[in-house]
Structure formats: structure tokens, C-alpha cells
Image 1 (cartoon, rainbow, N blue to C red):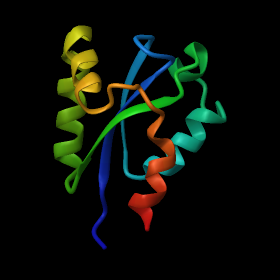
Image 2 (cartoon, one colour):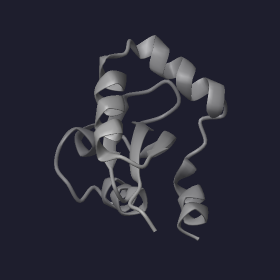
Image 3 (spheres, one colour):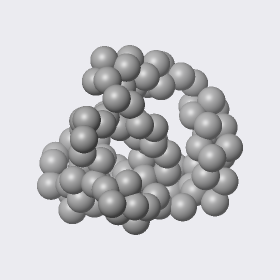
Image 4 (tube, one colour):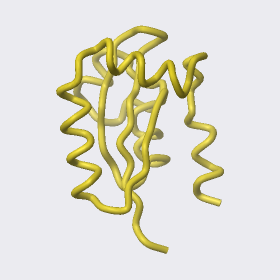
Length: 100
């Protein structure tokens, strides 16, 4: 299987603090975020809810999308989340279906 890359948005709560990141192993990365294993922004602000993610086959595409989303206005990010995840569910449990 080819390597997949993920661009994701985390939130502290509904309409709370947002974080945009990129990884090649979203399940592992979410475990790190939730366990607060890595010091930095997400640990400091309690940003652990996976509210949105996209999948890419190319690391270059994923990084370009991450860069683009980081430049977006907050309102645009909120609209993106609301369109695909209106209840602001934590999507972490759904990652197991991706791995299967």
C-alpha cells in the first residue's frame, strides 16, 4: 500500500482554539496529541479533538494544503469544519476504519 498523508484540524472544543497539522500516521499522531506527549501549542492549549482531516497520496500536496489552511481566516476554517462535521464530533475513533 502506498503511503498516505493527512492534513488535519484539531480543536479544544466547539468553536474553540484550532490547530492545523500534517502527518503520515494520523492515528499515531492523535495518540501523541491526546496523551500530551509532545510539548508545544496543542499541549499548552488542550487542543485534542480531531474535527477535520483530508487524505493525500503526496507529501508535497499535503504540505501545500496545510500551508494554505494555516493562512485561511478563522471563519473559513470554522465553515469547513461545520460543512463536514456539524456536530464537532471527535473523529479519532473513525481512524480505525481507515487502517482496516
